[in-house]
Image (cartoon, rainbow, N blue to C red; front, side, top):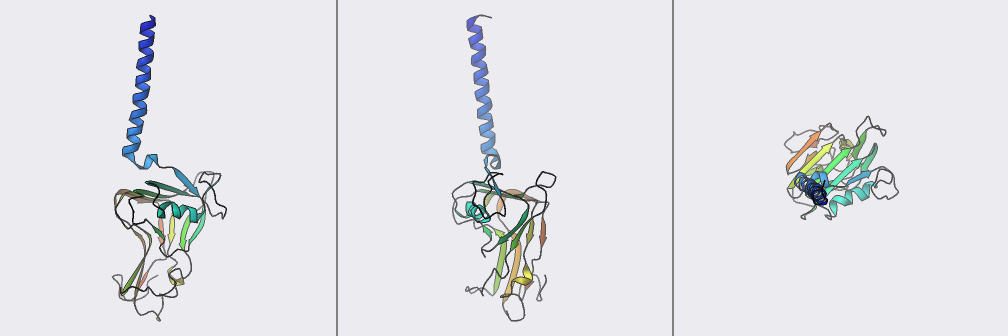
Length: 212
């Protein structure tokens, strides 16, 4: 092979390699979720960097969504029970980001097996809302703006309905509705999830009695 041919061959390989890199980059851009960093989350109280060996705390994880600093937020929950104490729950902010959100429990069958549970704290609602709405709607995961993509997988969402004592019971005469997910997104999926202990009370579309 002549030096020229060898150079041409190497140049072609280089161009091909570059094209493959560009093709991959384009694929990641179009795919959206593929380019997101996976942030691992655990029940630990020690702040981490988000790797599997140094996972985020729940507070750190929720801030990844609520801060609006990243377009793609992909949270991977390690097995355990995560108690949500913020009455806003998992809610995207009024901002352009994030555009794509994924909440995924680490699948069973890996070296880290077990159930991943996200649960409302007792009486997380606190007191009667100060709005004029006669029906207080309370959602575990919600969006304020349309997303490009929303994914929810391998998680148990627990509404802890009967422990919301300030708005559940005969003393509370307004309507209260506890729901799991209220999300608007162009694409996405919800699979292999358990939804439990949500309900409604009062004058709400679901009925006029307590339904846990």
